[in-house]
Image 1 (tube, each protein chain N blue to C red):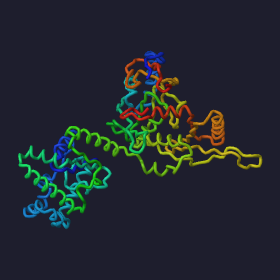
Image 2: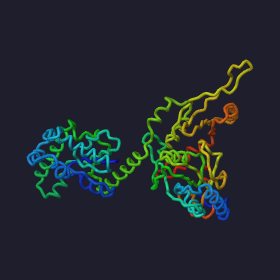
Image 3: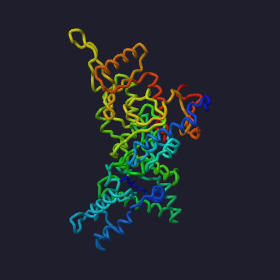
Image 4: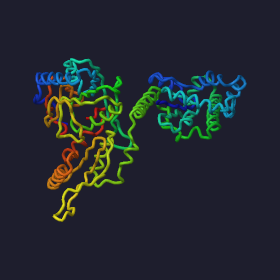
Length: 180
Length: 311
């Protein structure tokens, strides 16, 4: 395996904070008097949700949801399961789901199905990075920070093999594992 | 609620494993002692209690309310597992709840030689007494199950998993069972809708890539239909159909068609044209193409890593 490392910075700390503040203003306006539940999808959205929610000027709840892939009994592909479910009931609540990046939408689709089974009053999607060119499922994204460049990205919560999450900026990974 | 039944041979460390597993998982253990000392005295007099201790067939005797003691225990256990997650040690629970979807049936065994050596250590018996002790204990368990349920206690088909503790430590067994219990519990909380998937699965796919893609959709519990609709897209001057397009998959929950194409570029151009025509003729139809490179990237990305994030 060739070595990986931090490549070109794609979105600086300042770029991110500026855009997150803009998104925060928009979401605060849209959710006035709605007392939303902000659902962060672990682990990638960790820093994004922390910064975003501190820009929100409305009362809200925060909860976390995590999914994992377990080996399947009948399939080599495995099965996606919820590994950490919500602690707060979202039935009848306005839910804003916060993702780090949306690509094919398969993960998002799985989570949407799960959350919608709880019958929230509304369910909207907020992502820091969106890659609509990769999208397979027709799911509309309500709030998007940036369009993702077509490279493997790290930093600001996003990892490669659990490394680089704590970078304050978003960078390209040198030695893109998907292109090898 | 999720629950575990444990059937164990005497000297198999089954009791110790159950106790530690209950501590690890925070689950109460329902034991024969609890039933004998608490549940049965609520419906049985002292004579009946003595008979129940001596003869399994007495469990089939009816008491005041018209049900027998075995049915009474079953009703009480059913009440418990509906309300809380527990571990049931013995009591024929593997048969009472044989097909219960929330049950994990465990059997813990060891070879006779190992069990005798453990009995010798714990009870400080002579070897022949230890052998006799085990023989009687096994016979008693076997007779209880056979009398009440007409089944062979040692039939491995009654259990999801059988642990042989000859060379498996107590901690190892507890960790193993805790892991299986966690997986089973997660599966109960978020079941894969196998019926939905089975209904829509075709007998065969035209291309192996389509089958691979169907597995990725299954992985995400996303319902799909294979080639459910053909769209006419071109007609000749006389109005006869000359070209039609049948997308590979339809995802009803997301109202999206997916076309997989792992072919060479010259065919890709034709596919793109078909998709463009489809969108023009059937506005509002959501369709996405998965190209060769995207498909291989998908396969690579979704190769499973235990406990890994999905995307």
